[in-house]
Image (cartoon, rainbow, N blue to C red; front, top):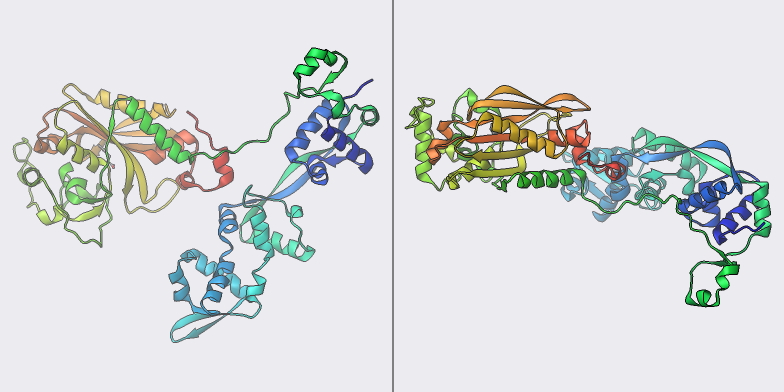
Amino acid sequence: MKYRLSEKARQILNHLSTMKRPLSASSIAKSLGLKDETVRSLLRSLRQRKLIEDKETTRIEFYQLTPEGQHFATKGLPEIRLVKLLAKQGDEGSVESIAKEKVLKPSEQTLALGWARQNKWISVSERDGHTWMKLMSNATEAIKQHPLQLALESAEESGLLQLDDVKFEKKDLRRIQNTLRKRKLAELVSRQTITVSITSKGHQALKAALTDEELIRDLSPDLLKSESWKDQDFMPYNLRAPTSPLYPGKKHPFVEFIDRLKRVLIGLGFQEAKGPLVEIEFWNNDALFMPQDHVAREVHDAYQIKTPKGPGRIIDESALKRVAKTHENGWTTGSTGWRYPYSFDIARRLVMRSQTTSVSMRFLSKHKKPPITMFSIDRNFRPEKFDATHSAEFIQIEGIIGSKDLTLRDLMGYIKAIAKGVGVEKLKFKPGFFPFTEPSVESFIFIPELGWREFGGSGIFRPEVTLPFGIDFPVLAWGLGADRLAMAALGIGDIRELATRNLGQLRKASMRF
Ligand code: PHE
């Protein structure tokens, strides 16, 4: 019986035969200096040919870096960065002088100080009302080849830390393991691996195998002409050989999601518009018929701007006057207005934009002929407490469409089409209230991980909003939560994960649409 063995397959059989015990793929790979995935695919074909067999399965343990661990792997542990900073400042520095360098984030400064002190790298004293840190003599030496830092760095690329891959002394090893756990830099995970051993058929093969040189790898013109291929064997292809996963560079899933959304809207015939992040209250609120000094203004709060102090400039003075009159007495819109003295100073105050509806108003003031179709997907800011579904900065999918015969049904249809464009079909509508629309509709989407969540507001702009800009036909408007939609589309239960930098997670992320 003839056996064909590739050079590497022969090496593996040989290794198993001399070691005389079952071995795991990764240990074979390490001993022979081959790649893990190469060995795995060779083992697979050897197993199919019954030259090796599976023995027991064993668990191997390794650590997976947390986002913080990953960060320190790249940037260095904060206490090490602190020592380097102090060394640069002549071995001593005050807490303020360190903070000024901006090498450490405020949260990291506390960590760095605590750990450097515990490691006895620095001594801390109070002088002239300042806290001073002084390097101890061993510190600069201790941070070179620092075991924990080395361990983290060895895992920087894959996010996986296999401690037996890095050569450490026993006592260091124990300390690293404890610290990783205590500081939540990595989590212990375990995986099953199987070991294989050589069969008797494998031993035979090893003795009788043809070498690679005796097999034809490439069919050459000579081989064809001489017909000598007829008496020789071909090296077989192993088309089933598993390959290792490839992680090519790709966009962050949230960026990809926003790109996709834009394509959906462009596909629906909308044109993209942009507006400033620092906005005057006129566009953020007044033009939207939100009274200047009234609870209705507090539908949401906006951040005021300290510098520059303003006031901002309103170019179209006549539009400003019409809006002012509309607020005071309804102007010619048929409304009674809010009945208060309008302040031009408030109108010019600067805020961080709290809604991209301001972009819609800027657009409307320049595009007055139907049909009007515009969208803007951009950032807004509101003072909010940070939690799983709220962030002080959020992205809205804003849009308007204005034309003679539009109705509320069209509005709901557009919102559905936008969500459907990214694969989200579970949607509900309820009546709502906004000072600038009548009727108003609130929509809800289903986030598998959280249940039904508010998706955004919409409605038909009131005449008090459109008439001052010379628009006398219905304008449908909406402002939807891009973050919420992304959570539903990407299967994410926590808004903070949208901006994740966890490599493992990013590599696995896939679009559901
Ligand atoms: N701007 C509103 C918000 O941020 C949403 C909205 C937009 C409502 C357009 C109606 C029309 O809550």
